[in-house]
Image (cartoon, rainbow, N blue to C red; front, side, top):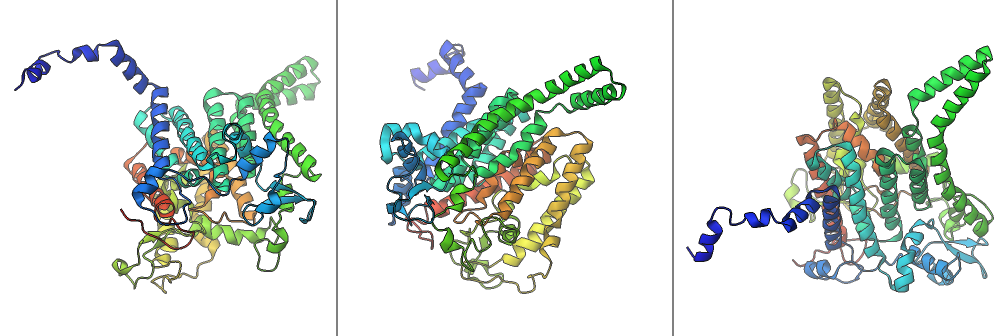
Length: 555
């Protein structure tokens, strides 16, 4: 044993470090809420960077793909619109030259000589990336900005999780579930305009939820929901969550009761007091509405200037490809919004699993073509990419036997109606089992989801669980809006539209877990992380050429 080893083995030889001010300072940073938040943000950014997408157009090694980081996104509408703003324009000057590569709305419509070209997507992401464009111009890496936004979202999710549980282990698990166990990972690292929109909107939504649950600041919550709205329009339908959460229902009932009593007896003093009480209850809602209204009205004014209409759908109504897609068999055959589009969305959102063991004989999964499990560009069901979201249907259901029956019913539905009938199916192969192609009406197959959601709402109302009621009030309208839309989100991994209500599904999942993390919850979260890692690698590292085909890289 050396002299140095003997010194370090002496009792108290390391105590100087443990008792030093530097050690105490570093420990306080690491163990503080902001220290952990910073660590999660940095770790998420590093993982997102390693798994980010590259638009090389030619095969490269996995090592080079990781070390080189993300390529600039080709679909960079936000960058071009931000550049236009900086040059005093609302339209993209060379938009005509970019048709077929980027989507634009024309004014006047249809597109002709002299038309102005406006990006199809709302301007939220352009405003977010505008400072970067000011510094770096059109060369700014939009994908890299998306990674940073995604990492910041992880920090906000952790802060929201601290409101849900005091257990730091559970807080980290919940953060991991959202950042790596959902399709948010794929959207944040992909970088194209549609996916960048989701990355930014989710950040705003979680910040709005934080301001509601923790900050208790309705005006700021309205501002943040408004920012999400001008980034992803369907997010505005989540306003009911904030209305419900900012309403003090006990005081509202008391004020209304006093008002009825005062009106019945014409007691003017009591009437004035009741009106004051109602105004106190309504004040948070008014503050929230003002914050949200700034963006709703501002976007309407912008559309009046651009298209002579306040409609938020103005760009879609004057989409340069609208006529081409409105022919029989086209995506817009039934218009932009139609109940007939439900048949496009429901099979993807509720039923579609990942492709498993394609091009293999019955049961002989080892003879399948590599990769053995892969996603479809058309999307996959919410439970296929985030199994933990199934817990959302058990929110506010506390009776053990009902939770067991509900969980078993969900498992039976997913396994026997959706997974087994699709084993062996692939982009060019048919499923293994003809006998498993059940002739069961879709409404019956989906009934367990609807029944359990209804029970969750009923029990939440009975137990006055305001959070669960508010979350369902936000989720359901957005889901309906999505199912009426013509586009299903292609190309995508999973079902990216669910990110428009991801914070509310996140909260419902925690409530459905019973506000504690069990081994079942950890297992489903871990499964979601593995699935989404596979989706990210399948797209970003194993397919470097195009949207079709799998090109395995050299390890």
